[in-house]
Structure formats: C-alpha cells, structure tokens
Length: 222
Image 1 (spheres, rainbow, N blue to C red):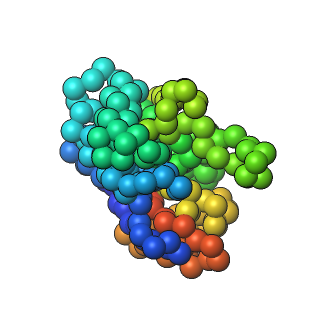
Image 2: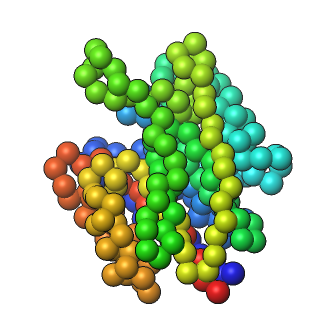
C-alpha cells in the first residue's frame, strides 16, 4: 500500500498561528497539535509536541508512552520559562503499519476515517461544560496539571485498506464546516489532495470568528 500525507495550515481570524502539524512519510506518522487558547506560548507547546513525537516514536513501545513523555517535557518547559503558568496543546496522531492505523489522541483536535463513502470521527473531544464560563473547556491536554484534571491519552488501532483515507484537523476546521461539506470536498478533490487541504483550510478560515485551521490528509493507495 502506498501512503502519502498532505497538509496545510492558516492563521484564520487570530493574530498568530498556534497550530503545528507533522507529516513523516518515512515513519508513516502524521499529527496535528493546537496550542491551548488562554494559555501562554501555545505555538511552542504544539511544536514541542509534534517534534517530540517524530523524534521519539521509534524509542517507545506505544504512542501513548510518547504522549506521557511529552507531557513531562511541556510541564517542565512551563516551569522553567513561565513559572508554571498555563502552557499546553492538544495532540492527535496516526501511525500506519501494514494494514493497521494506530490513533493516539489528547484534547479536541480530531482524527477522521473516510472509507470512500462515510466520514467517521475516530476521536472524542475531551471537554466539559464550565458553568462559570457558560461554555465548554478542555479537561485533558498536554501540559495540564494533574491537580486540575488527570491527563487522559486514548489509543486504538483500526484496519485500513487502499482507497481509504484519514483526515486530522484542529478545531478551526470542524467548528466552522459540516461533515457533509468535508466529504463533498474530499470527493471533489479525490485526485488532487494538495488542493483539498488548501481549500478546507481557506474555506473554514473565511467564516466569521474563525480560528487557526490545520488539516492533514493521509491518502492510502494500492
């Protein structure tokens, strides 16, 4: 099976882009990370996450173990440079081996699986409703203090086949675009994934109140 990743990222309606992404076709490793809003140095945390994932994935028995090592690094960076102030990031990744894809996830960036017909959300947003803020807030991410909420890293492995694809995205995409629209664009640009990731990001970023938007599309071919 031939595996190829494509990605694009835009700042959207924010002042800076705190998202990061990873495409490593040599390790068949793909990821999206989104620096935590309201925290400091979100762009540093997200870059630490994807860079650390790429560097360490071969040295641990599971992706979940890598995530916990990244958690320790980000907490230490926060202590060293921010005096322990909030600094964090989501991280959602996929690693492919033969006909299996291992998904590992923390936060609210998402991994989707597209079988050619149906788009399935493979990750669950890790958030709760905050009565004081009258909105949802993350309750698990890399950099969260254990006395606030425990870090929850979710890992699973699924079967994959040629002709299918995986889509990873920060919340700037799916909060602004319906699943049906995403499917329509995947079908429209089936032979041009570079254009697909570009259009997904540009369309989501041009809506009102847009966020940073980052998309990684992994194409599976014979």
